[in-house]
Length: 484
Image (tube, rainbow, N blue to C red; front, side, top):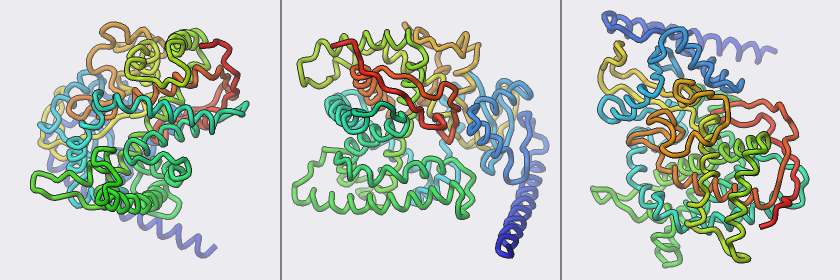
């Protein structure tokens, strides 16, 4: 009891200290900008701001509520808040997206919460935005469509092995954990040339804790999401370091190819000064790729399965398209790039899922200089946040926004800057095409094998930090009766 009381007292004093510090800092900032016409809004509690509400609306399954409540109350274009200890302007709508995406590295630049810098230690030696720039120079050669064509057959092979090991022989499965297994398996193969299921499993378990803690209040106390994420990242980084050391040996002995994957490329590529990346830098970058390469895609796959279970008419249209492709294949023949291009309706379905349940809810920027937007001043150093939901569920951008309608993506598709599941501008997600491939390959393989029914019709959806069914989307599997 005494220990409990002491801990509680300590936390109380920490909170008061942070509050006074934040209040003092906030007063100085406000006085410094006393003449500025700041965006309307409120900053909430000292230090904490509105972070708890920002995070809790997501965990309750309605991340858009935080955005739309304030758009209605303050402004549909921009409002002021405080998130993760930072004064933040939330820019809304297609015009807001266009403004931010078009002014990258002019008025704004990428910004990551302090939690990201602490989970990825190498980024603190420069900055997370500098690390991001380095990654964007490295990735295009591997993630552009021409380079990805060679991965289609490999993804199909992994998908077939995945269904054989995780789905066959089961009448009921939880989709979300299985989808994560599949996308993580693909990521390990593409980035590290690892495909042994047991080796892949060494990484898989800590990634849930890591993903949940990346965007969290950076309080490093036992039991907090941030603390669990740091422990998980250290565990994964240790395993990655062993892989990197072995790859160096294999490259020196010609047992590995310089072009076989991103790891080899990182080890052998120098910067403009002739410097090679350190092992810690490489481990952190691979760690980031593994997170980005499987978490978002696994969430998208899970919601595709969810919506196809709920919408039999859509399911049968996808089935017809995928079975037509299956009928064109010889026994044992793997999918290829041409097959992927035939999956037009399946891709429209995937896009509509990404509109209604975007894995990337939004992202932060930092104001490089003071500027005016929509008549309001955004001070230098303020953080800016754009939200996919400010357009994805906006009836001005998508009529009947709650209706599932893949036809929205026929022809020219949605208006520019309204559909932003992969961001936009110079910071458009470089893995967009990679995600498209692995998701479509998964769709092809599940449609060939199964019909399915949801076991929990009213299962709650939470966002932490990506949308996911609270119970993992359990379904009952039924054999596919339509033959190829």
